[in-house]
Length: 456
Image 1 (cartoon, helix red, strand yellow):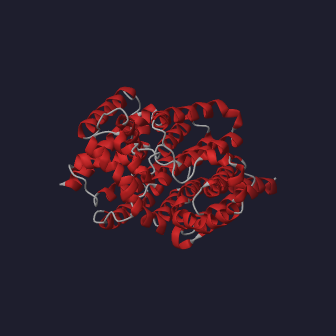
Image 2 (cartoon, rainbow, N blue to C red):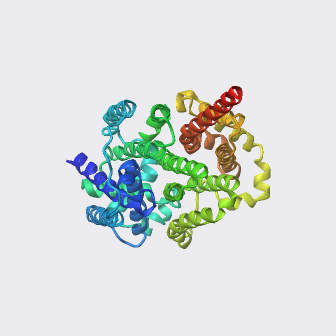
Image 3 (tube, rainbow, N blue to C red):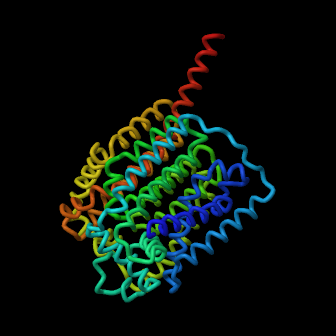
């Protein structure tokens, strides 16, 4: 019964996501809604997470009633916005897509055998994420007794509430604080992200290349292992990765809906973990360097993200919460920073080793680096420059965290290095299909031009 309730709640999230597609400009007709419906599930999860996290700050509980109202409102909005538009026409999917979806379903069923029975036995899962999710479930809102209480300072009280809010929604729909089935929600993050990447890139990337890229991500050992911990790092990475893929598409095509989708995903990333701010800043810097002539669109997208983050920042400021590990204000403590400058290169090198470890992330980063180099050699500029800027900035930013931290760097680095790089790896992996497709298009165009020249 609890599994049925959990899946029912996620079905309502899917319905709620359909209304976001017309709102973000992703689907301006029934035909496009059908073509890009794979984006609906992730949009629905983010919508429910963002809405429930904000309502938790104003003493409003979100469960079956909230899900039903949000789904009904979303469906009504979708029907109204698309009324009278072009209807979809049925086309038999190609054999590659059919095989890809069948393999994906089989893989998720196999993964699900572990996720539905896994114990919640990792420290951060108990002490941070499930503790807050249970508190939201029990109290119905972000009661400062817990969420700003000195007794709970160990739980990183300044972390945003998207993941705990989703956990609380699950607990309310299941009717219990189920510490095993909650893992299924983390697996569903992976399902939503893979479907979103497929829908986002299917008309820009050959099916074989796209499915190989998706399965390279899904089968990376760290994805399974870290999702099963019920930590927020891989959910953050998956949401952020879809945003990076959408941003990469916008760089190439200048489609407004792609930037709107990227901005929505980045809002989800900002409300998932504090590190999301670093990653989102890195991407916007990359976009600004690459597409500075489109700065107005970037300013609107960044402003929307800041607006959605603002209620949580007001809550943090009003209750004087701060990270127990580090503070950005420490960056200006010259004595502390100067004494730890040697930590930067160590952290930089250690994080690189984690990203390149085949037993964690497979060959994702190596493939990304090879395609990035090939794209530059072939004369591509915009997409490779964007990819290069945001990854380097994010990598340097993560290294800087260990410099400004007041924790002993070796133990802090050892305990976080495996998971903190997830967003860089997944974000890079989301650009692999686009880099491959753009490089192949450029190479083909060069060969045709050479053939015409030889024929002339």
